Image (cartoon, rainbow, N blue to C red; front, side):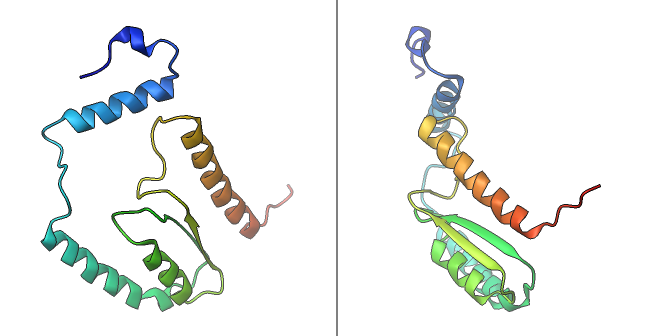
Length: 135
């Protein structure tokens, strides 16, 4: 049940959107709230194993970002993939405390700061590799 409108006064738009999104998801019986099915997990493991085998063929610069609290895929797989890649320019950054979905919609100022820091990290990495031409 959503809180009364009077309780929303003083909340930022991001906080309101975060509240609505989480309440709708939690209260929606059509959403799956259980664990990962065994068949799905086995399929993912097999696919990730195949993906790891082709890592040496990735001969391009790469930046991998991953949260250490990801419950969908392990950040260790990202570290292994970056280490196995066929390039000397593979970087893997693990963000402490972040889950699979790193860019929450809404949340609080802390979420916004984390999102900005991740995007800045990505931008810095990219700009280090791009030569800008003067016209």
